[in-house]
Image 1 (cartoon, helix red, strand yellow):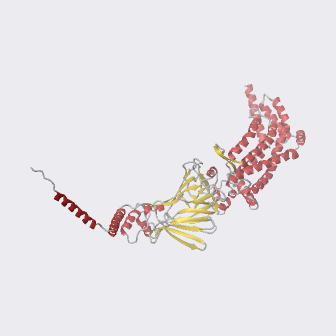
Image 2 (cartoon, one colour):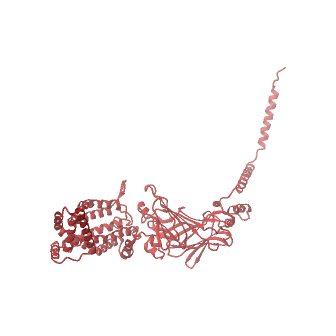
Image 3 (cartoon, rainbow, N blue to C red):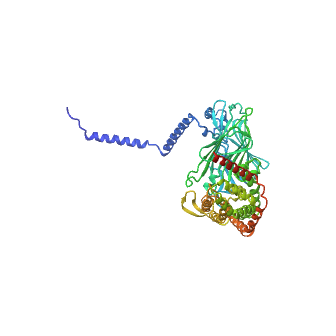
Length: 634
């Protein structure tokens, strides 16, 4: 076969055809307007496709809200999820929004979503230190929430924190009233009602339902859950952590707290108030109708003070709200304010119990002596000076007891040679030595317990001061000398490292208090050692006192370094005054020669009738001696 070949005419023909095609394509390309229209058309198609896809998906309760009127498809989807409460999503307020109510003391912000308080600011108090410009915010940035779990009659479980409430703010006289309604119909709703009065930290808070007896399953109480992560508001994290606790009143005015630590829980019944107490501020829920068995939980959030600097504790409360005739109606109140004894006591709700003043006699001393006295002084003079005058008054009031204690030591000191002689005489018979020693005491008119009793009387006052000063809200951010806050440590130097138990700073008032207690113990230990000879079989008190002279100041330095400066100032002044009182008593009041003469005169008289304690002790000794004699005969 003959091979085919392309000639020149064929090549020219192909080129012309290709050129014509290119020219046709160029002439038929769309204009800029046509391209823009085509792009818009494509975007519309994509948007419609996405909308159609979204309408077929399940709508989560958290995203419910803002239903367009007449959108029957979306409404039908909501009714599948929310049942009767789908009505709430059809309202204009079914969207993110907030309502603010405030007075001279507090500012509260309530969210449409959930109907609870999402911001609670105290207007007259600053965080950390005075002049910081940062107001105390008890609730802020989702550190708290309030939720009611709703069990519906058609077997749905809904959470109010995910649903939208309708707000209505009105004024009743000078009071602000905010009604937040979660609606299941025009006249069927669950309502949170907030009532804020002028110049008050207390906020009325009512929860009630209307027309929901057929909407909700009323066989079980509603579960109210309240959570709060407490913000740090003070300079010392460790100090604030120590005094941040979940307190509650239950039963017949009984009071308790959930233990400090991780995952602590209590389940009290008939709870009247729940207090999420921080060191100097508290958030408290009170109810007129006591909650039945409740679950109260506390969790420690501060593990490392260098890292955990925002939150102190996590508190949780689950309480049941019982139905009455198919409806819920609870009259309650919120307290957002200072943990101040006088302020809390003014409400006459036993709220002052959350202030740790000590139990029994310690609490009585604080309530009836320390708080009124210090309150009176601090209303007229600066707080630092008030502490000094307060300490002087307390020590002067206790000086007769100090005198009795020192007088007893002086008498024992005079008798020491004779007691030592009895010890040598009856060295091999300890029981006989004790009997003869007791006879000597009785004959000389000396009570060996007289020196201990005054010291025991002073102990409750000392312990009460350890409870009073850390709880004294009046001292917060009040300065004195180098201390800028008497309720916190008075750091004069920041250490570049951390010392276990001591901390990362040096406080001056604890150093002064440690020096004062050293000289006080040095001054009194010699007399105590001379007054009380060592008894056989008993610890060597002289040696123990020598150790205590050095141990006590060291303990003062370690444990008080992170305590409030007010307490260290009190102990410093207290020890100084005690040194002064002892010096005066020792050198100008108690005369050893006169005491010796009086004792010798007492010996010539008939012995005083033994007290019950001495008589009982004497009988025990005689019985022991008789038994010993019997054993020897056997």
